[in-house]
Length: 114
Image (tube, rainbow, N blue to C red; front, side, top):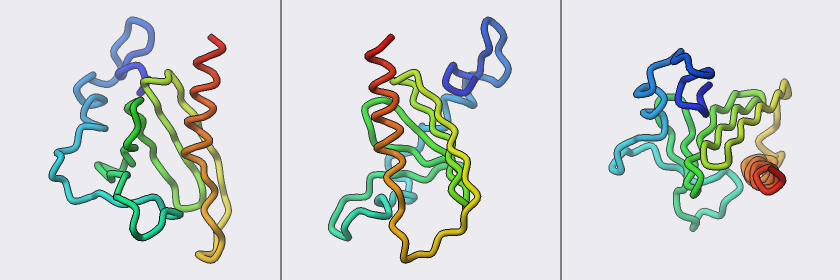
């Protein structure tokens, strides 16, 4: 429903303007951060906006991220939604798994096979 602009079939469940506002943060918005595994010199590529992580990719992807490893990834350009369940408490010493690149690869692969 979110990937489809708030609609299910021909029925609008959530106003399209609400869905369109998710990745639409002002350019001057101060919530920009870098991926956790990125070196300190890397540019800030993620934007935190209204509890969503906006990815800087060509597909308009965004993601919700839970404290224990849950992820809700939406990529309108790849026509992909991925839900990743998690229930682990990870130590800060454990590297963060590269889930976003994996989600993008899954979406790109699925897009090629359609």
